Structure formats: C-alpha cells, structure tokens
Length: 164
View 1: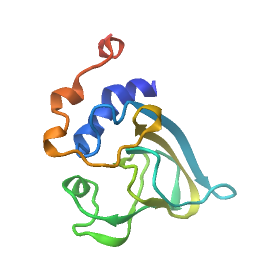
View 2 (view 1 turned 60 degrees about the vertical axis):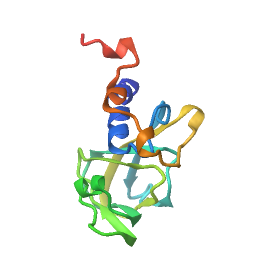
View 3 (view 1 turned 180 degrees about the vertical axis):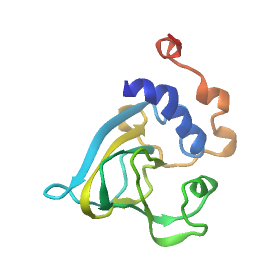
View 4 (view 1 turned 90 degrees about the vertical axis):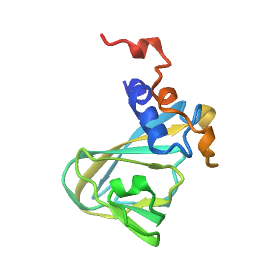
C-alpha cells in the first residue's frame, strides 16, 4: 500500500534528504493523487506551492513534449546538485525534465509550476507529506534538533517491520 511505502521508505528518505524541515511528527500523514496532462484536458498547472512539507512526484510515463516542472528562486544546496539543478542561485525558473520512472522529491513550499504540455500525455503520482491534521512545517530545525539516522529508520509499526 502507499501507506506502507510512506512509512517504510518515503518518510525516512525525506528526513534524511531534508533534515532542516522534516523531523519527528512533520510527515506523519500523507495525501496521494495522480495528475494527467494531455490535449483536451489540463495542459499545465500555474505557479504554486504544495500543501506539504515534502512532495514526492513520480513520473508514471507515456510520451510527450513540453510539460517540464519549473522551479523558481533556486538556491543550490548539496541535495540540488544530485538533481542536476544549477550551481548558483537564480531568480528565474529552472526546468526539470521528467522521464518515465523519474522520482523528484522537493520541499512543498518551493514555488514551482507544470509548464505547458506541447504533445502527448504525461501522468504523475504525487504524494504530499505533512503533519497531523494537515499541518505543514515551514520553520527550519537547528542542527542539534534534527533527527538522527537511527530515529529516521526506526520502524514504528510492528506490522510494517515484518519481513514475510
């Protein structure tokens, strides 16, 4: 299930990738949905922020041109280098080109938009992580307040920890 995936993998990865914003309780709940862009339906999504502390965006596939995900006001941090984002800060937009199977993790409060799809169809699975009752943390943790690797990967549910 998506809940098992979030509990066992996504939440600990989000805490490891973004320890400044995801601590204990900041990603206890999730909301998942799919989006589809194609002619005659939605072609783009205007500039926005997500209702999440962390967003996972998985490209499910199809064939298309256009439809990049553009990020704004990018200030490079070590995690950004792994994503191929620029090496300096920029006030303009930085496009991210999806391919089927590509997964992108980003802070929900990072402003972005889905650019116009030119041809074809693109579908994505989106998972938003947030605290209980939809609370989204925006203040950063101080280094001494961040979760440790042991805390991140500790299995909190006996049902999810079994290896059957």
